[in-house]
Length: 270
Image (cartoon, rainbow, N blue to C red):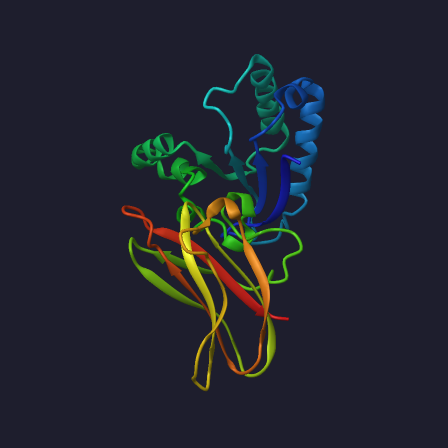
């Protein structure tokens, strides 16, 4: 359950995501041969997504999630497995590493890498990217929010009624309020909706505004002094619109003093 292949990046590359948090090193890296067989199966699943047609991508996008991983987690077993994997992949999967994205790195380290990346060759800086725990805006330049798992600050999860609808990204500056239209309907309709804050916290109001005017309907809102937090993940629900109108969300960054907040929202008619 640490690795899966799903979706494509902004250039159409198949995406292979590996999550290292809460990993049992003894079980994962205890047997080098078993580790290699497992990693090769995941790689084969990813390579199978390549089309090998003119103009189509011929390499992969790999995302490594380091949330919950201590800075120094390598043991001799880990080192041996990684060394063996590097050799096997170099021998049998040459030139498949199109882009590697490291996410949820400690902020100090990621900011340091980003600062020094300007001195790297352009080819290298495009292939290796390191993002901190609040760098979802940078991550979404390479992966659409719909393709980023919920645990990484995106909207991808199983059994989501609003899946398939495009996401709206909303940046809310300090002490500011931003409004986004999730969907508009021309008559009575069932609207499946999703919303979240990607990092830290935000206050919100989800409302339905009738097209003919009149009072708006409060669908859902964060409780006073209890903002929506990133660890809450994606909030979702279904609203029965009684008439033509628009489903809107107002995000309020009323708790922060320094940082803006990045929020996502979407809706679709069922």
